Every structure is written in C-alpha cells, then in structure tokens.
Image (tube, rainbow, N blue to C red; front, side, top):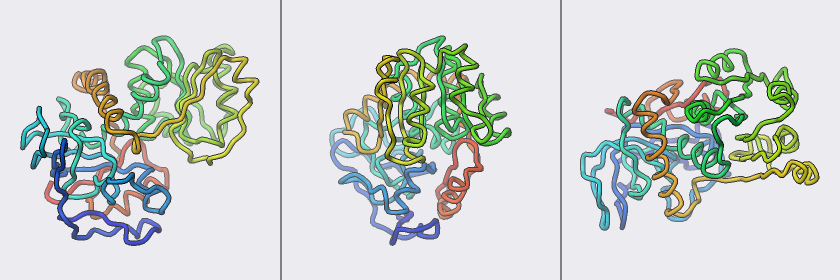
Length: 328
C-alpha cells in the first residue's frame, strides 16, 4: 500500500507519499481501507519531530479516518468486512489502510457521507471527553472556547448548544466570528482587539465562564483562571501558546476552581474505548438528527498532505481539512 511517510522531520515538504508494508490486524483489531483522513495540529508536531507516536502505533501521521473494514483480526465481534466506519487512531490515518483497535471504531452516522465522517472522531472524542466527561458542562452554564473556528471549536459550539449551554468563543477575525455565530455562539470575542477576560466578565455580569476549553496552554493560563467563575473548570487540550506558565493558586482557591489537562493519543486502549462508547451514545444521535454537523473547510488528495499542513499552519481555515485517499 501507500502512505504518507516522514523520512526526515521538517516542513510540509517533508511529507512523502511512498510505498510501505500493509498493516496486519492483531488481536482485537480490524483493518480499515481508508477513504479519508483529517489533518490535526498533532500531525504537524509529528512532522516537525516533536510528537512521536506511542509505542506500537503506526509511524505514519493521521489521528482519525473513515473507510470500510477490509479484514478482521482475532477476538473481534460486532463488526463485519464491508462495514462503513470512522475511527479514532494513534497514528496511520494518512494511508490506504490502517489497523484499528475495535473499541475505537464508530459507525458512519446517518446523513453523512463516508468522506465527511473522517472529520468526526478526533473532535467529538476530544470535546466530549474534556467538556462533558471531565469538566461536566451543564445546561445554563457558560462555556468559553478558545479557537472557536477550529475543528475542535466548531464541534464544541454545537455540542454545548445542544445541551443548553451558553457559548463564548475567541477567534482572530470577524469572518471567523461570523461563522461561529452561525453555529450558535452567543458571545463573540476578537482576541486581536479585545481582552477575553474583560469580555467574559461583561457578558456574564461579572460571574465568569463555568468551563473553558483551551488550546493555548501557558500563554493563557493566568488569564483563563481570572476568567473562570466560582467553581469553574479549565480544560487544557493544547499548548500552542507554550508549555510553562504561572498559576495564581490564591485565585484558584478563592474560586474553588479546577484545572485539568488531557490528551487522547497516548491513553490506554480501555480509556479510549470508553470515550468512543460515550461519543456513540451521546453525540451520534445529535449528528444523525442534524443538530450537529462537522464543519469541513476543504478536501485535498491524500498525496497532497503537505498542502493540508500548510493550510493549518496559516490558520486561515474554519473547521476541518480532509485528505481523500486515491480512488475514494
């Protein structure tokens, strides 16, 4: 088969479409013939040499895909050859085939094409696990989403609105904020021109955000804590703004607030399977009835993965960038 390889770390040009050995499904795995994969910022870090796959995972980038089951390994039940699926991966999505633990498979939701389904696994699992399973967002509460126009952000807006929460977003342009508003965002903050701490305070009569979903890390740490409401929960899922910051413990104590930080890729299989099962139970019905939809910025040939990386690095996109396998 062919896959995107990274012979040497570097820029988008480091991604090379090359012939590699076919994966073989092991115990508890299925082989998926890939139709499409999605580009995530973690893939950019892997290409640059900063985010190696966990032990035993495919060396090829790609944390989510869609396709059809081509083979079933020992110990797998409930799935059949030919089933159309999408999957959360530890790697290997930028390829014609990938081996996937059965617990990380999801059926393609009604109303979506097989290509579109590739935009769902990583964002739905990230948002549901952090905003709902960890931070316990409740109806009537306020969620602040940094990077509201990203793939994660566009999904977080929709899921929070679906459960009856109020949603604030930050983004870097009026065009991106308009797209967030179309998805249901209530409070629109241009981070280039406005202070999100001040804007959240104004919009909530000084109460603050009950939950903050943060992709920036160190750069926003202190301000995020200031923006939290009493009993607020800060969920950190990225470090685009650095890895080391100062935390005002006194403010955290006074607010009785909590800070959590998680990633999906390196979690044990049973934890990933539990998240995937929760997404299938709670999110898939919302997708099937049309209340939630993936936002797809563009689709590119998988061989042009480097262009997909350039799009994400330029940050001009809204939603997800997909890579479509040859012949799909």
